[in-house]
Length: 152
Image (tube, rainbow, N blue to C red):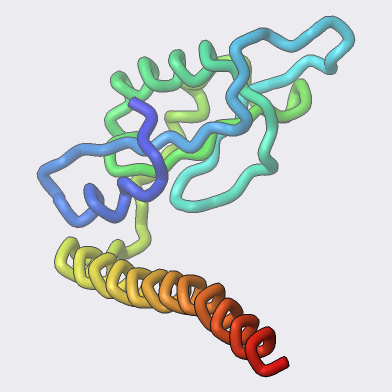
């Protein structure tokens, strides 16, 4: 399955959950159009980066299926893109053979929830302050205008 990146913060601390997170490039439904240079498949694991490139839904679907037969893909975050022909592979299996599980430490669920609550509280307070200021400004302008008109 293709999961958003943020799910790794929820699943990674749970050792009983075997996850594979796939971060695809620019998803497209169609195969490359005539005249486009031929492309090969590329895969990076453990937070490594690849240049963002187009990749078809079909290619990602094949990767999802191939991950089911690649036990070393469990517990990993994969970046899937295409590269120039002959700089990658024609199939996912050789790339998956070299994949390693994530090695970075993820925050605990308690830490993530605490940080989320703190961010929501601060964001909420800021939004309320902006809303109050926005509501007070027209009233202050109206009062000032009335005083200006009546003082003449």
